[in-house]
Image (cartoon, rainbow, N blue to C red; front, side, top):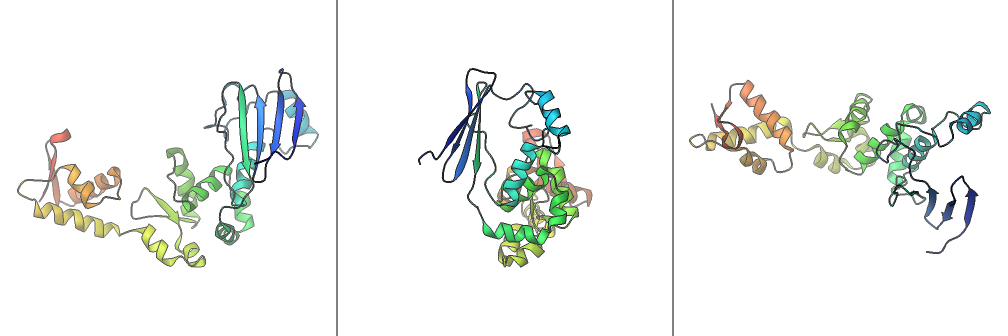
Length: 254
């Protein structure tokens, strides 16, 4: 992988900003590390320009739409163009390393976004777009991202799977991409089917009861909180009860 071009911009530090262009990525190295209070985890939500006066001057001159918007645009554009998200791998207190990628990951994702519509996309924040990208890639969402996923469910872009805590692309988008079988697989078995499996297991082991680990075997792909939800439903309906506490707790069919 050979370097195509390098440009250096003088900064207040003894080092320089280095921009390196490769066939499939752009690598920016900025000396000084992240500004105080900024981390890779919160960089989309917090802004702390190195020189606030320069940032405000650019905004008043109309050179930028608003101070601190660059990172939002960077991530949003990557998702909309179906490219890998920017990465800060290798960043430390002395240098910020930013990698921006150029190759398209999945042309089908571009077709999917066309169905969403440009007007709707324009109303999304970078967080909404990142959630759509992660759901499309079948990646786990952070807890803070779940509220954006719920908003996308209301818009008919995402659906909840039978897991209740996991999100998938809606059926109409799977149909558009001719992935009907994948939709059925990701949607999973219905809530009633899971409840029936748990209830049947409880009845078969009514005499000795069932520790929680049993249900992990019955529903190997379900999260623990989903299993607890199903047990709570059965308890509320009078079909199951729990005896004991902690590791000694066992569930029985009523």
